[in-house]
Length: 495
Ligand code: SIN
Image (cartoon, rainbow, N blue to C red; front, side, top):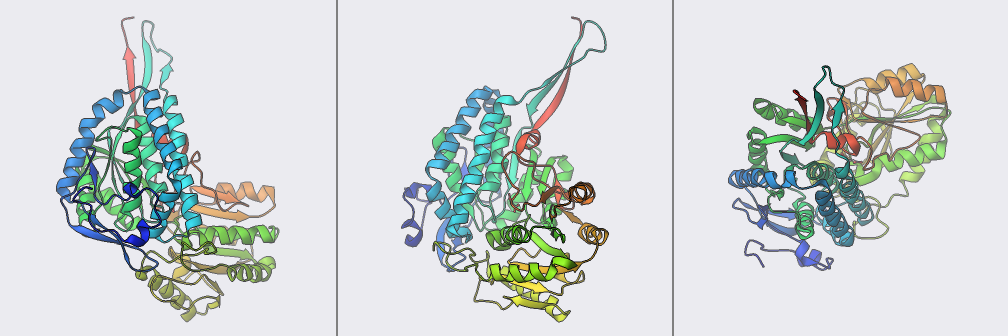
């Protein structure tokens, strides 16, 4: 056992069949090492320490950057098929250890085990998909503009990449960035959220077992203050050519500013405020089921989740009544219990934020039809508010919690104007059977992703991302690979 690997709570160890997946220090240049402050990872359900991790500092970040730079030369030269085989081996190990990964994820993040299992499958799907896609990283032959010339566009890896990843999807948000980067021939340094480093460390342990060479995939686990310093180092380093970040718009803007002096390529998946629009002609049970799935997945801690729900007057009362009936069936509790559908929020501050949004709405005339009163600590009950308006915080800002505000609207024009107000433009959802309206709305709604009569729309092969202040670039699918490549124009003359 590595001496850096200190305490670990037996309660989590009890649930893990391969204890070597529980790594507790950073992984740089193929070694488990860290020289920064130790920090505790706590279980949001119990508040108990899951593991004490030896954290990284700026000097570890510099080592990781140099390690990734050194490894780049060999990795980019590797044949696409060889990189594909290594990614495939990593994917197979993720599948093989899916149950352990789900338990680690659930213990440090708090989502119900059944959702954690889905996330592992979702996370693994990016690795599988980019293992295949790495074999199709084609350039282009272009028509010559003079005789005796051949023109081509080469596709090359961008180089050393950094990824700063969030706690709400501690596995999938890493694989969605790392798999295309590795497939393209880039090397990567991941700085996972301080709340959820164990999933990241388990993933890199599996990548190591798969044979991904030292320095190609590095993970810097760190506490909050060290994370800020490491983030700055990754942004400011001229060696790092790409930064991918998933998190809040405020932090995204800060990272963008820190990356400006080195003119880094950026992929930013930032905050959303998704409108969920239900027209009179919608299929009611399907709209309600869609709203529940979108709103309460991961206890509402999802960038793409329905944040504000608009229902046309004719269906409003029936929708509200069925929604409340279904919300009351949700079971809040311990993520490890089979019947639990809503776990805790990531920390007590997140629960306080939901309560602040509820109080703000109620003080302006809204009423809580169900929920609306806080539980102890990190838990907040699924809550439905009615009589909300656009001045309320819950309609203007991302709640990131299990709060569903329901607003009534009359016309298509009204709801489009409301939906497009504000600076965010990540996801949106519409329920209607009117095909002409679907096309009208698809063109006019300001968002990067639109679900029509569908609310769970993410997949490894589709482009995920937002417009306006919800971010830059796309992850997933073919465009997700483009993020990690650059085009070099080659003009061969004298032929
Ligand atoms: C996110 O919250 O950013 C990720 C959600 C998803 O990939 O579906």
